[in-house]
Length: 449
Image (cartoon, rainbow, N blue to C red; front, side, top):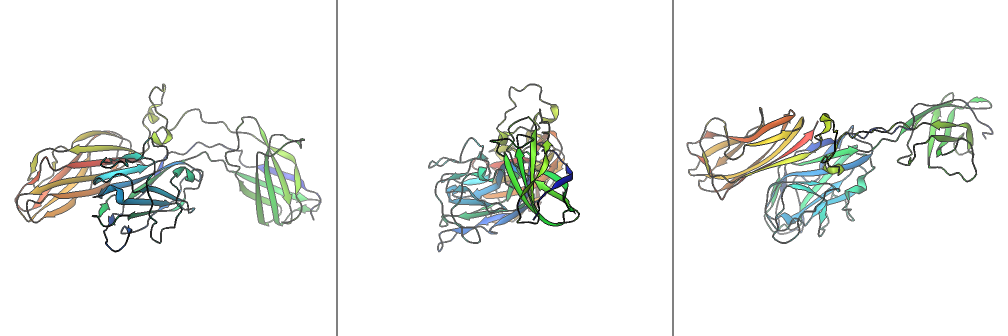
């Protein structure tokens, strides 16, 4: 049994450092999801079902997060259900039998717990691309391999958890008797990290016989006083079970979480039981901890943080526009006829957008027709001088209205750019027509690097 313990050398390698919160980090899986129909089962899973995003180098403590389901096309919005499963197994139902009974064309829904609105649920009220809180009016259980109920509907359940690992999104149709649809842009998840509170402790443990080897339990407590004081209590306690100790040297990470609510100095009380399972003996003296200075200037403000820039003076130029996710929508119903065999700007699509340097996820949809059969066309998005890939489509027969959709990720510089869709004819000798019963829509999600 350890009867006495001397701290010959005990050092704290890092103070209780309140690091600056991280900027938004975004991860995407743009695999297209196809939503089928069935008359024999009550819930139809998408194909593929259970798409994943592997997250690395992300915050170890989530402050807030957003999940975007991109370029949704479906004939009956209220049929859709989407379930997010975290690396830790938390199950968050993002949407279930909401968004009324209206048709969806190239819509992007961003789910964030701090949003000021939910999806519309009133009969006949259409939804639009936007940012919403999770919206659930009814729940049908998701087929395996999705986890079973119960499901949470609060993304805040993920705050404080580790973002790193595999995230999974399950999508299904809860009323499969109606027509299905597609999610052409896949999905994206964006994290903002909380203050990192962990620090590294290094020390050498000795008893009367010399340095300790083998195993030990080390109990760290955060205290208000440098010496034992009647009535004192720990602000937080963390116990570590350490093995393989050689010559008394220990290195371990200690995290008390967000328990520090004062700016005055604190002390680290260290108790050791060596070997493991023995009685604890306190190392003396207690180690003083110095609180590091806090940031006095914000690095980011966006809707997820609920901090508006309006009315704020002295905002640094570099952060006056937050590098978080924002979206731009373009809608046109212009009478148009195009027959060019070289790229031309699609009538009605040109619009000025102010971009942050990073990625632009563009989801677009065009409905039109041709007057003769057997013709093919290509459409691509353009932001400034940066163009996306061509999406090719073929018309046969003629006169039938057809919806063409596409998704592209463009790397864009900062500044005001002109966004447009370009079209060209690749076969046939007719025109592609868009009239007042047809439409053009596009959504741009500006994602930071």
